Length: 181
Image (cartoon, rainbow, N blue to C red):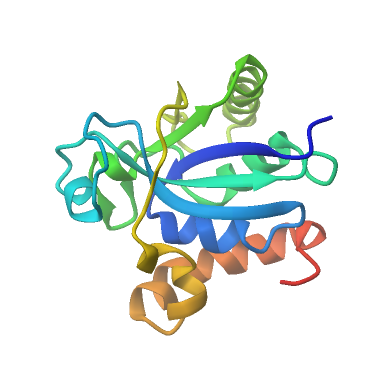
């Protein structure tokens, strides 16, 4: 079994996803960045324009001996709304779309299976619209986006948008909390 594996996920603002995965057992690192667009070396300003085609994503590096890719996806589909196209709450635009960027056939198959299972369970009133696409070049976001929630937890966006997602993770997945969280 490999020592680490990587998942790349887009589910709205990357600050929300990063804040959750930073507290998950087995996660070795989380980086905010951009993927899926046509512009090389995009900036936050470029991506926010919606013209680059990039998605705000997190790159989650994890220990598969501690947590599985399926576990990573189960958390992902719990902490964002996978039924809204190009939107999470008040964050609207293609850069906020729900997408799983897979690394290899096994990740693709697992993502598609999880989506089928969740759709069949009818957890949401609408079908899942999460895209499942091959990973492409990851562009790390500017430094001030890294660990944003940890460093800015009292900022209004963090209080009203990020914190509820972190709280939901901590309540629903208490058994998956890192010992350092």
